[in-house]
Length: 399
Image 1 (cartoon, helix red, strand yellow):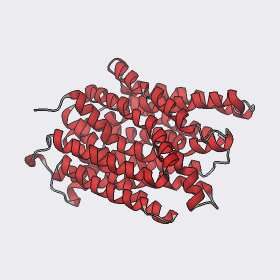
Image 2: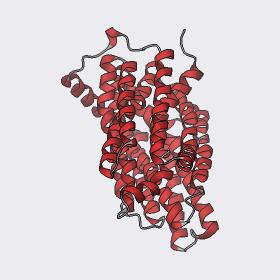
Image 3: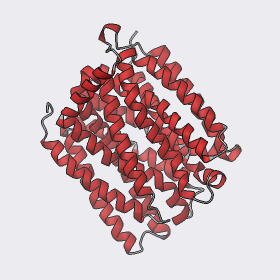
């Protein structure tokens, strides 16, 4: 019996959410990690987040082609083993270097459910219907960023930050068993590609030869840079600029829940307006919004209770924008790659994620205890994203 669309969306959302849980649940733990492992340089605690994303980016180069060769489900199992092992290593780490290495490995393991879930969606859906399914996945996916910081804070209140990794292990076990029981392998043996360097090279060259795919990846880099910059710096701004570290998980949960409506909203309008126009409008709105935030900051209007409310609303806008851009851009990149969906998901995800975390990590090093670095960086990334979207709109889908 084929899995229902509702259950499929729920399972895919859980697989994708492995990444969000692995990042957001640790946000409340950053002060404790910094105090215990890198008290002389608190900004180094950001490495716990950025190195996971880097590992995930590199992992996507392998997991996609492997899923084209050995099937989708086997690669999910393989990734789960790496993820669980590295999570255990995080629990027993005694210094920042060990924790960082373990987080890179954990990111590699998390790449499997992230990439393979995209390939599974492409295996079963196409066109705007694929974008619609992706949007519904993002709706459920948004619950995890909302709950994860609360979960992390709750665990810290009764244990310590290392126990959070035990939850990661349990989450991976549940999603993997669910996949094993309910998903029928869509990639039959006769459809699989030999796992050799030459076919991967040929597939990669085909992917990058398509202008629409290149433009979607570039735009994804800037859209991801906006989101990752916010994720890397938001907890520190809550703590150092507003003095609200204790209430951060609650505010973050509210922001994530409300911004989850963006994906649902996108699923309602994408069939009418199209993916490219929605992405373009989102970028231009963020440009105007960030300019306004810079003006408020320079006018000293972002401090105090009123300024805090404005800042929270802006962060909500950033997450809302992610819901309007990520699913659409991913669908645009994957649309012409149905015959190499695994490799396509691998290459597009790896390049966009690695690019995003690189520019966001660079921006994070300019953090000075105020929101200025975040606002200025997001303004730059949104402007670059709007520029690339201009060409994306004019690009033929077959070129």
